[in-house]
Amino acid sequence: MQVHEKRRDLVANVAALKRDQKTVGFVPTMGALHKGHLALVERAIAENDIVVTSIFVNPTQFNNSEDLVNYPRTLESDVKLLSELKSNDIIVFAPSPKEVYGDQMSSINYNFGGLENEMEGKFRPGHFDGVGTVLKHLFTIVSPTRAYFGEKDFQQLQIVRKLVEIEKMPVQIIGCPIYREDSGLALSSRNKRLNEKQLKASPLIYKILKQAKKDFGTKSAVKLNEWVSLQLKKNEELKLEYFEIAKVSDLKSIKRKQKDTKYRAFIAVFAGDIRLIDNIALN
Ligand code: PAF
Image (cartoon, rainbow, N blue to C red; front, side):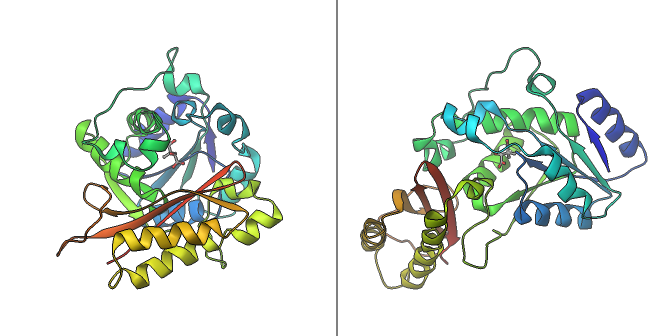
């Protein structure tokens, strides 16, 4: 397995492979890899000749500087985990901010057709501009055939689909199912920071989503919202930031259901200062 820190080395490596007509799968990450990331890499290995995994904690997508400082940085163990997949077809790209952004680390101001203003967009101003900007840079450097994203960040996934449309980038975006602990907690690099009590409380998030899915046919969106707020008020470790039932197409939150429309429920919760998000398809 090769690890490149320099943009030019990665570009030269991928260019040589592409000259040989090899397909390139790309799994962008911010490191602190877990089984969910490894599942994306394994899928990318199965569907492409080679796989590039980037490990880069992107400063422009953090609207909270403490979150950026506290974000786990575990390059050595990340590389070890990837090497345990025993594939000769993985290339790791672990650049510095300068290698990605050059001398000017700033975000492009994107219009993702309103997707950026819903849910995470409301609570994390500038976040999706940062995600869009770093992915534009990374897609340019890696020039992947396919790129893989987890559905845990479903809003991000929809925005990435929009990004490649706006930037006219010839990469196929592939969404992959949420990977969960046996407890139901969606895997996230932030889970490493949960203390024992928070970890014990956190399965409630998925329990609530599953119940909301069960009740979606019979209860109104308003009633479900009230029920979710109540469940979280009763819990001392978790604090609800938002629960929304939204259309898959534009991620707009709904009060009333319509026929022939796909919906998902989205939730964001704080455990102490650790922010956890999750979502579920409702129909
Ligand atoms: O989902 C993430 O880990 C990040 O938002 C991504 C896609 C790697 C961009 O920094």
